[in-house]
Length: 136
Image 1 (spheres, rainbow, N blue to C red):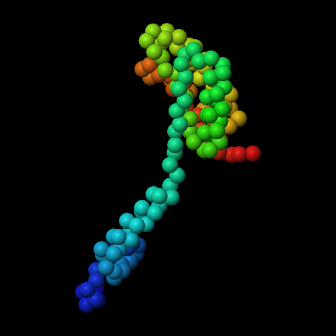
Image 2: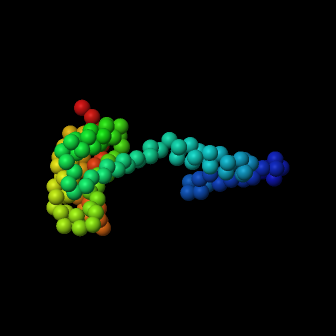
């Protein structure tokens, strides 16, 4: 029947008993499949990670300023990665950087949850905070 109509016989569900086939134009069928996949991908939510940089000796005013930005990012549903960047011999004060990041995480406790505790990688110490899903 497919040859008479100059169309292709396409197997839709090979695992069914009996297998399901359809008479369609194969190129059009492939095009429709790609179109559906593209639409599904465009509807998927992209995760955005905003970065906030601290120094090991960040003072209180700068800390509050950056904290305010982090709160707004989390309220918009974006993840926040805060890091302390150690320059030169400042790596000696890594405890200070960890205390700063834990203080940052504690301040964000009501709007976000900590995904990754402070971890040192090279000259940077990272902390990742994700927004809380259940909003009251």
